[in-house]
Length: 78
Image (cartoon, rainbow, N blue to C red):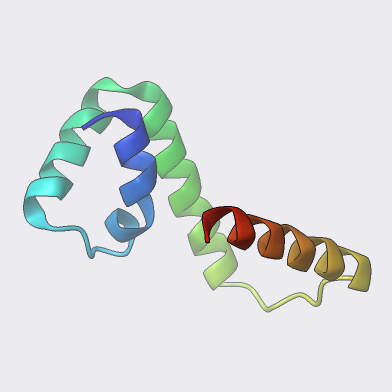
């Protein structure tokens, strides 16, 4: 497993939905890669923080920019 794979599997790992073999490989990688370890820890803390908070309404300008970026990314991937 390399850093790119860790990023691809990150949410499944944090959600506990990663297959056993892949989870073990990812955890082995985390033992030796400080950067990925930090990414996993920071993402875990961010998810926990936002799961425990109330939803915040985004300003209209931010929503518009976000929707535009998502549509652009969808066209690139589609």
